[in-house]
Image (cartoon, rainbow, N blue to C red):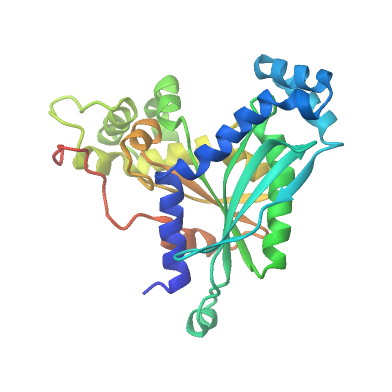
Length: 305
């Protein structure tokens, strides 16, 4: 049976993804901060940052490189939670204006028996976001670096990341990725049809609902596609931001978030990542910590199909 720290991490990981309200305040602050930039930075800085919202990646990257000479990472006071140990907030700032944010949780040390089995005190990094004038893949690096240092100082022996694979279903549809499943493994026509149905959010031909049978048939093939999607070159991807900040992809997690919005957007899939040296046990441990315990998603009013 999983120890208290693993159970806390599993609960907190689900809660952080399924209840985004904890990020809404931070994102509102980002929007509000961008409107107040002229108060704290030069007028030229404010103008360039706002203009960069619609600029090319090269221009946004150049702006990030310029601001990096002045930005700092501020760490908020830790907040204790009943189920998940200490929670931290990190803010990337230039002249007191938040340009990016990151959250982290440090879970209680495992009991002696779990430590004797090789379990370590674990921390979770999640919720990276930044001003749209900057590429997340660049803005997240100093945040992750500061978070890892803070967590290590406070006793974390292992640091993992968690990122929703936002936009996965749209990418599968746009790429018609079910047509190339044969190159990713032994997937037949049933799996391909199920993947298309889940990605489009419609029942398979001959079925009246998009239900458990379809999700079950799609799972393995969708996970293979999600693994490829997690590694794609997208400077706005939270998953890629963690990869470029030194993490390894540990696993992808099917229906980790079963909210309707998440299922429509990404089949509820999240990625877990391991910072530091990758260990062969990381994937199995990640499954233990993050996989939902409720089984296959059942749409509201839906039947197995």
